[in-house]
Length: 129
Image (tube, rainbow, N blue to C red):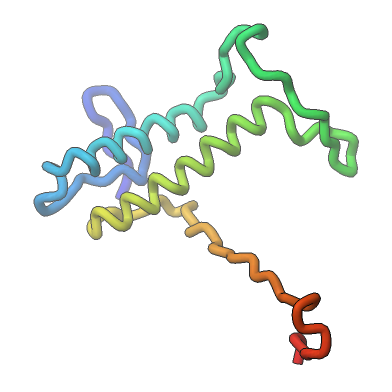
């Protein structure tokens, strides 16, 4: 399962040939193309947001970690956005193409739902146990 060079281009290991009739599906092809674009952007060391200073929205207030390093830089926020989009594209590919093998570093996102407990409506009811 080594990446195979294709006319001088080294493809990432998670890109596999599509099997069955799925290679004709334009949605799967578009998702694969977007996954390749996101992977290329994340692997390159280039800045992800290359808009001029005046065209960008103002940055939020800086947030620092315990070591005093800023953790919400423009680059970090752009990288997080691409990572979330990558997770979504991989999830869609898994649903649409059963032969798709996700990358080794892919973990499905944890689903959560917030439930509101009506304590004010039912003050005498024991919701805990």
